[in-house]
Length: 212
Image (spheres, rainbow, N blue to C red):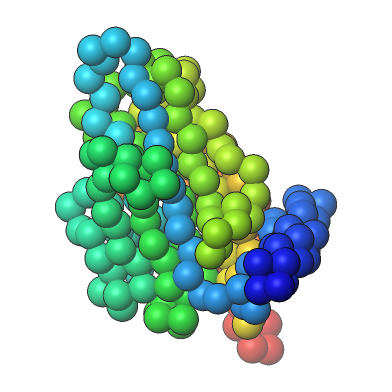
């Protein structure tokens, strides 16, 4: 009976998180605050590609608050942590980044899911790679396929964005340059509007003065 109830909950969840016309999938708080970003890959032969999964935490203005990547495995607010699984022991993923929305700094409005080739090698040398977004035991959207992504060495897989008080996620799959999140800054800003970011409106609000 418990197993049947669990399946009913999963079916209900999957119905709720179907794509809603480009505005992203809602993260249902009823299924808990813990999300996982799982990245897996296979390289061509002896190809040397150092793949690095990153979560970039941005505020309303698109400014970087924090990031979790190869050189910083836990965010300052302890909401994001990263682990490598060289033997793919964690559900077959090479890397997993865990996000706890309940611990997230309230100033964070966007969580950018970025995958870089840290040594600068292009994704042409990657035979296959995927990025999966999971809540509990359920994938909340289709996998993003990263392999053979042209001459780029960075892929922006998707963005979590806050719609107070809830969160949503949108798959993006945009490629560009950058061995790490700092070098991929232009790629991130270019794609933020797909998660509701309005750079023009923000600029106008900064220049607005009362009575003029």
